[in-house]
Every structure is written in structure tokens, then in C-alpha cells.
Length: 176
View 1 (tube, rainbow, N blue to C red):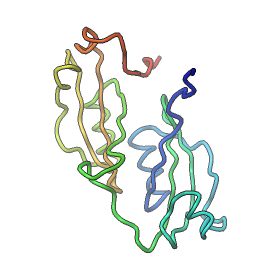
View 2 (tube, one colour):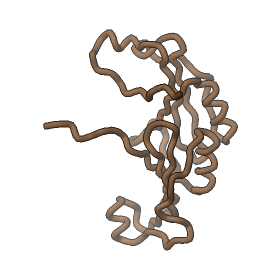
View 3 (cartoon, one colour):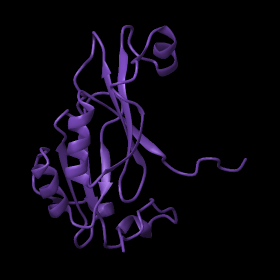
View 4 (cartoon, one colour):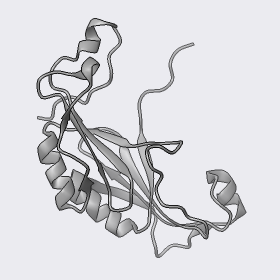
């Protein structure tokens, strides 16, 4: 059977304030708003059918939905939701989506921009582990103002894993 998955289209993120999250993503990553499918002026999406279709908690409502783009890669779809039982963002040790990783040309520059936009970086950039190691192959983790984990990664040097398998991980093409 032929493979039908062509790639990752977008990442959906629930945020407490869509305007603040958009401002952060614009400042931290150079994200751009493409369109909104639900604005705060529209009637919120809520009720049993919405809860069932999107597997939302009972009483949850979607207040706004906005699609953003990065320079390369999948889109980021922001959801501003309210729920009587809303929980803070999960920690990496919890089950489920752990973090979003962004390939960057310069980890230090990207983390500086992230901090300037209001994010928190946990440490200086570190070398990647042995099978991914190489000159300037680095990574660093941070957290957005609403608690989502983000990894910044760069591996401009050939990684040792390529000597052990013919399979290759996807890497964005260099920017012009």
C-alpha cells in the first residue's frame, strides 16, 4: 500500500489569550498571521456537538481560532478556549505531546529572540547526544509564556547516525 502521509501540516496549540500568543509568536519566531476561522466577534463554538467532534471537556468553548505560518515548515493553529476544568500546560514528564522542536540556523540567536519576546530559556545551548553530535550541532529548551515547551535545534554537520542506517530524518532546506 502506498504511503499517503505527505508531511506535517500544522500544530494546534490552545492558548489563554490569542492576541498575546500571536504577539509572542511574531516576536519570537517571526510568525505571520494567515487567516482567522473564528474571531472574538463571532459566536463561540460550544455545545455537545463541538465537544464531541473535538473531544473537548463538557462546558468548554472555543473563542477564537487563528492560523499562522513560520518561514518553513508546518503552520501553527492557535485556539483560544475557555473551560470550567481547564488545566495548565502539561510538563514533559506527563503523557502526550511533549514539545515542539524548531530547526534554526543559530541556536543562540533564536533563543535570544525567544527571550526578548517573553519566553524563558532553561540553559545555554548544549551539544546534541552522540548519534546526533557534530561541530555546531546544538539544542536548547525553553517555555512560552503560556507554558508550552519549545526546543531549538541545529545540526549543520553530518550526524553519526547516518553511518548506521540509510534512513534520514527530515530537515528543512536552508533559507536563501
